[in-house]
Amino acid sequence: MPNAGASVSSADGSAFPDANLVSSDALDAGGDQTEGARDVTDLEKQKAEDLISRLELSVGQIFPRDSANSGLIAEMIQTLNGLRSLLGLVRPH
Image (tube, rainbow, N blue to C red; front, side):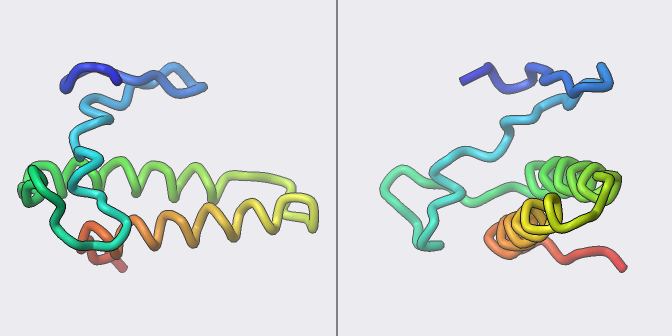
């Protein structure tokens, strides 16, 4: 796993700074605190919100939106919504 603060590059060459701020312990699938887990800080929530928003924009740019891609797009949106829910992030309207 990259060090905190490392950048991850996207296909367009832009960087996603601090892409790994949220620990796997904080993302426990059951939502329960595991031993050694910690609460997600406001800064980590903001970084996660920024990354999720960028992913949502990228999903919206997938074309063509035909039957071949519709299942993938729906799964990506559902996964991002689940991640938002898990982190307690409210989707901006």
